[in-house]
Length: 327
Image (cartoon, rainbow, N blue to C red):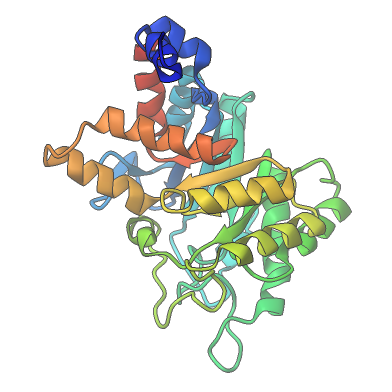
């Protein structure tokens, strides 16, 4: 008589049968490609700490959009790298700003491809923090809210399909929702970075976007990586304020948080497979320590298994190609 585990072994022995009993599925449509669109770049400019990722001109971003659409990716997420920065980060809400211009160009070229826009001030402020500074030199939460809302409306006006505030200011989802509704964008959904941790894995992103804080750090408004229950509370607060989706960032070390947030909110959950996680895999693969396609697909599948409906990943294009090779 065969032991019960033997039955699964027989099923796993066949690639076709494995597909029938697989609990977790990963498809290109689950993946979102983040892109850095820079005002000062002509064509593309490699990012040294993120091999294979470039800062892009608007024309190059449109070409990437064509490629993403052909690969069947779920969406793009745009980050802006302006030519000039100031104390308030005013480039974030300019109607002809880099993200706004890129959004219009991409939606014209690929109208069916979803465009998500990151809403934060850190790429636009000369001090690198995610909000404006008060007299004491710390981020003024309440003074920042209206600027974030103004930025969100400018993105929606440019054609963004989904607005994603990543600043972690208290009350920003409600403020943005009210502003969008008042400006005629009640149908534009919000993807809130609800559980964004003060992580060591953001270094390459800050290099790419030129957004490292000029002083101090972001621990006052980003979360302690030790706090899982707080992440759930933060997500529930954003849901109360009107978030349509919530995000956990980073992803690789936070599967427990992804699962807990999914269960608590019942909303679609995104996981951000961040720049440092990408760079680690790239470095290990370049050194011959691991098989990059196998490792990436295992990581992305694990995030889906944890509860992520959507995964933002710099590996999105490659992962889509590797998935196609498996079919």
